[in-house]
Length: 119
Image 1: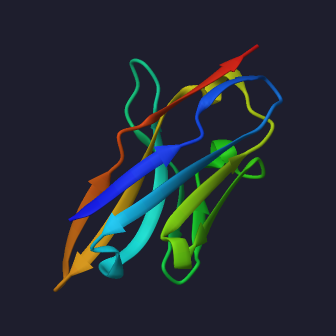
Image 2: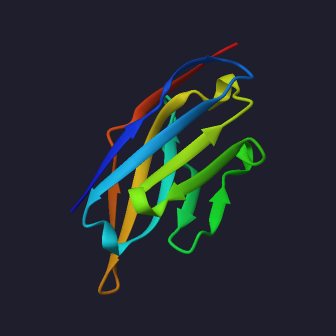
């Protein structure tokens, strides 16, 4: 099992910045990727950014150039730096960890952290 604890959400004005953190514990040795997803009211959960164990990253088109995902392997922590925030970025942000064990994938989720952007 993997436990994920998120922090860093809050209220920010449009154009501002926030930094989300997600600390993983438990069976972290088999995690091969971590990422951030978000879900706004009435919408489906969507991928925001993802980083693999090798350091490869991918981003949703809507956040490219504004958000940066990074990781501290020693701390089993992944970060999401969000700059130039827009009202449409407001959502509950969820941390995700993907484990690969004997060819089978397992997904774990944090409890979510609210990001509110005022216009």
